[in-house]
Length: 570
Image 1 (tube, one colour):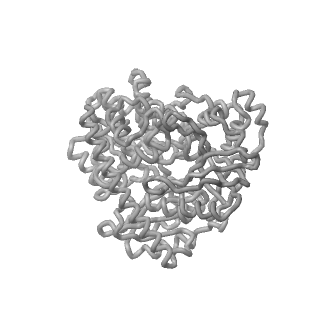
Image 2 (cartoon, one colour; image 1 turned 45 degrees about the vertical axis):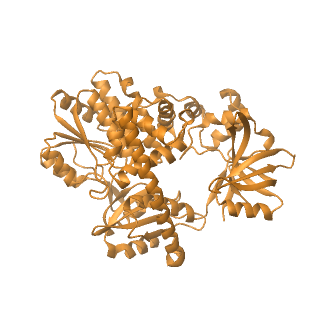
Image 3 (tube, rainbow, N blue to C red; image 1 turned 135 degrees about the horizontal axis):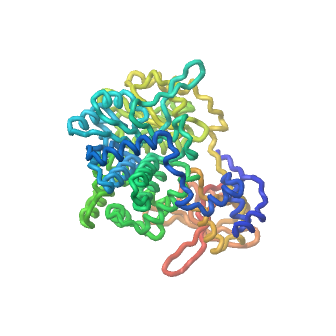
């Protein structure tokens, strides 16, 4: 059973509205997102590229820039080693593009998800040594690769780490002792000795900061790399970073750039997936573009995505984009099968009694374990790990709920893992098959989640009568964009609504259309995209109902109508 609650945060909404030329309703929505005080409100409403922090504030940025400037002048071979997800590939592209424009002798390498696993490994280091590489730069990985980096250093490599993941640590006498790799420079805003003001950057944003700082030092115009913000935006949304502070600016500016992108590969991907570029937003990045990019690293090689981003002609870009879309269509089918099997196991075994779900699907493709874990987390409102067989070991991906710090909890089971890493909301691991039951038992025994933590919460911004909903109001709501983690789309509610004309429509019969009438007699068209059969049944059984919703303007054959998208009902 969902728990609905209305945010009751207080402020002088009329005063805020007058000061910033917005409606009191919008002022309330901003307060609900914990944007408090003139400076924060102004940054939220009016923040631009000029408000981004100087990357040189990051610990070791000065060392990294100094090293790279020298390597470029001395024509040393530089290799960027990224990761196979959206953030890793875009960070790789950002560094490769930025360095090559500065005249660097730079190439790239990305681990194979199945053969290499996540992050830097000895094989990648040895490959660099064999190829005569002088300097390795990691991006979106490296902070947990102390042994591999030590191996590279011992073999004469210069190593620069750029990452955004949590710093590994061990606990001694109740104190955390952080473990930094022995690299020549380690750039990660999570370093306890890093005073960078904003900690929530993705790997691509950290890479961008390095490129920008390097341009400054080498007396090149850093505005020349502003276009790479579109890659930062894609990575920020797809890595589910909070859209607050600098991330809000990166994504807002990046979306504007994506709508008129000059990157042939991204242009082709937007075209072949049928996105209206003028309306492109975070939904399209997270649920259309991102999955296609991810499909390369999941089912083939992420190097294919790099080829797309580096495509020189429209023809090459179109062919590569089409391949990625087809790969993603295959991935969708595999995901559905994995989700069904996971649900079957949970419902027919003692797993359903666990507060942390650890589901072993040996035949599930390991590349989709994280997606399946996310879907299971959503269905059961519990942290979920999906484990799959991979060669002689088991690999897993976890997705968490707000009340559960997954990485911290996994640290308590560290002795069971061959390897693990991640952050509060998501994590990955590898372990021996015989340790699965021990992991499941241990992670549940240490779990302190309450029944309330496991109850799905619906946070409603405000009760909003239908007469308030106008095209002008809907237009004003766009000021709050981009929406996503940390800046959710507003959710309104109304009660005692009568439903008429409810019917299921669409080629796949997956849309419910109806008309809602409030107590004043004001009517609104509405649609619902969830379990349409269950919703229709509820509508037929009840005289009046309560709904949460978001309003938008629907355009069809030149006709504009206001339409509510129903999110929840009861």
